[in-house]
Every structure is written in structure tokens, then in C-alpha cells.
Image 1 (cartoon, helix red, strand yellow):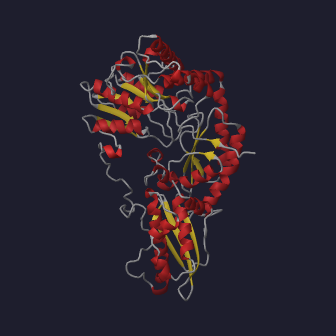
Image 2: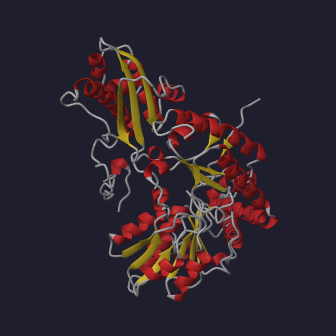
Image 3: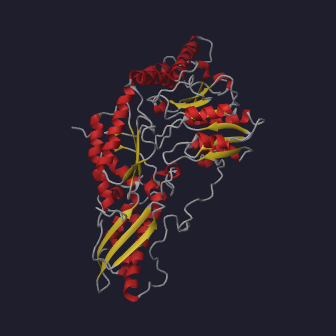
Length: 391
Length: 167
């Protein structure tokens, strides 16, 4: 019997769905034309790109022409923030974001801050939630743009995007949201939400890496970040990554089907089984992020008295793939800024473990993790100078 | 990223745990940085380290270096033990990733702090120049107890050899 392998790092990336791979394959060596060419080869490739755009649009209730394909989520974040800031620089220079954004967002905003713009970084509460009232209070006459993520990658918290977007709309401020972790996993319809721009990434929903998209509501002006041949409505030049986009399209269609069929509910049940099971079995652990307003596949905890990397490696040796926001896993001496933003102290934050489920995670997988994890914690705690057993 | 030896000493730690009858205890590191090492020694009248235990809060490299140094100094006189430096520990483990070299320093200083404690208990003070408890070495001593690690952010510039991003 081969030992069980349980991959619980789906927030980092997911396995490409076989149907996605199958859809992509012809576009490498059969329908290999440049989608911008007029001949049959080009038209074939163009049809693939057009279909993909419609599939991605359908997933979020958008129109195909509102979808700008990019080379991934980070690029889409950069395009949204730099593109909108440049387009609106005569109107104002102030940008608002939150302390728990992805680096693709935070570092872009900070870079703009060094290049003539000004920014405010909003704090979050102990569950990682941004308060719409604080957003409103931060808006100034020269505020042009606010960006608050749809859901956080490290702690799973889903932000009150509808309220945040409403505040922005009321004050005439553009609202962008990084939806990389959320799209394809929770129902999002941009027709019902006051979102002006949203970032998506294929590889977080069983699609290929290096492919993303920015949803841009009609009428919003962006200055390109990548200049060139004028592809993607002139906003993002470069020959289209046809196989990648086709894969993204198929991944989006499959995600839409999963969301419609209620398959996501089972993922949520398994997530809760994992969280509750760990809480029962391991003393002195805390859930990070919001208990209920969280991504359906996301479980993240902090284990007291031990450091994350040790747990990660022992879990790995047991065939379980997880991640950690401890200093040792980040290569710096600071634990994750997201965890510190929640108000956690350093030693607690160093003991973080994130487990993110996939559509294929089974009850048996969760049982296996619940069996393997507690002794690993006990082993590391028995070596920890801070741990006093039965105290 | 880790050598087989590091993985072995992390997965199967030698001399891990507490010691109730230790006559010298050293504790170094800082929980803020994610590394704290506590060394327990039992030193006999000939100043030989008869027994040693460690408790470590830290990453795999921190546990492996603790584990390795306890093996290296066990049975040695304290004078011999103090000659073992961080490079010896890293070498004995077949090398450490650059970001983890500070862990081997922590191991060296853990022994030093425990020996200092031995002299403090015996004579009332530590010999000159000894590392004593509760220093932060994880960051090369650059952080104050409460200052943390808010080092200045470096401006990223384009250096083609390094493939760093142009700003």
C-alpha cells in the first residue's frame, strides 16, 4: 500500500484539472496560430481566446469585454493599481488599501508612494476584517482609488466587499479588489456588487500558472503597464498565451458548475471537520481569521509553544503538504505581517500553520491529518522551553 | 534546502528534553525572532560535561543545531566544549542554508551561556567576555529587546546579474 499523500496547500496553488489540461493541449501544437493573425491558424486560436474570455466573464457575471487577460494575479494587481493611479493622477494622488493585502498589492502601492502618490493603509480587527467606517474616514478629497482584497490568502477571512465598495461609490472613489483566493470558490456576481476592478488567477482554481485576469467595469480608464502590440483592448500588450487562456476558461467554467451544484458545501463541511477536529485534539491552538466569514476551503491556526517550520517539515514527512507564516519559512526573522496585523504576538505568529483543501479532499484525508497532526505538535512541544505540560 | 544530516538531527533529536538535576542552565535567543534555545548541563568536579539536554523553540535548523552541539560537547571538559564554534556545528551538519547560519551561532552561545551560569552559581559571577542568558543572537545582535526587527526597507534597484526588479 502506498502511503497516503494529502496536499493541503491549495491557497498556494492547485492541481490542474484533467479536463483543463485536455482543453489546453491542442493549442500547443495543433491550433498554434497567433490569435492576432488573419489566416485560418490565427482565427482558430482567436476562437479559443474568445471562448475563454466568455467563460471567465460568465463565472463572475461580467461581459466578455470587461475581462483583461494578464500573466497572472500579481500582474493584474499591478495593472489595476498603477494603471488606475496613472489614469487619475490629475484628479488626485491618494490611494487606500489594507494591512493584510498580498505583496503584489501592498508593494505596488508603496512604490507609487515613492513616486508622487500618497497612501493610507487601513488596519484590520482581530479576525482580519476591514471596517467600512474606517475606510470612509480615510477617504480624502484627493482619494482616487481604494483596494481591499475579497478574501485573505493566509487567514481565509472574507472582507465585507459589498459595504466597502458602497462606501467608495458614495464618495466617487474607484474600488479594486484582489479576488485571487475567492474567485471560483465563492459566488461572486459583479452585477450585484459595487466592484470596479477585480483580480483573478487561474492557478488558484485548478487552472494553469502564469495566467490571470483583471475584471474592469465598463467606462474605467487604465494606463497600460505593458506597452506593445495593443492586445487585450490596448491595455495589456503581448501575444496571448493561448493554451493558458483556454485552460483558464475551462477552469472558470468548471468552477461555475461547482458553485451551482453546491459541491462547495462539502468542501466547507470538511474544512469545519478539520478545524473542529484539531481544536478538540490539540490544546492551546487558535484559529486565525474569521470563524464563519471565511473561504470554504481554508483552515489556519496558530499552535502555541512551537515554530511553524518544524510542524511543516514533520507533516511533510508524514505525506501532508501545508504552509506556515513563521519567520523561518519566510526567510526573514519576522513572522507574517498578516498574522501580526491581527494583533497576535510574535511567538504565537511563529507557530502558524495553514491548511487549504481542494475539491478532491476526502473525509479519509481529513481523518488522516487529524491522526497525524496531534503527535507532531506533541513531539515539538516536548522539546520547547516554553511548554509546561498539564499546566 | 536542508542536508540529510540536518533532517536526521531534526527528526530524531539527540538529548532533547528537560533536565531536573542540571547544575548549569543557559538560555539564548528571543521568542520575537522565533528562536529560543535552552541548554541544561550536568558538570562534574573535573569540569567534564557528564550530561546535557536541550529545549528549543525554533525551526528545524535550530532544533538540529541544538541537537548536534549537545552530542559534540557531551563528555568533554568545559574548556574543550567552549572551543567548539558555530562553524564546527554547521560543518558537522553538512552545512546550513545561509539564512539559517544564525542557528548555529545560537547553539554555540547556548553552551557559552550555560557554562557562564555554571561559574555564576559557583563563584558568583561569569568569567569576562562570556555570553550570558537572554541575548538575542538570531539577528546578529542587532535588535534591542523591544526594538524588534524593523530594519530599513531597502530600495530595490535593477542589478542584471542578480535578476532584481528595476524600479
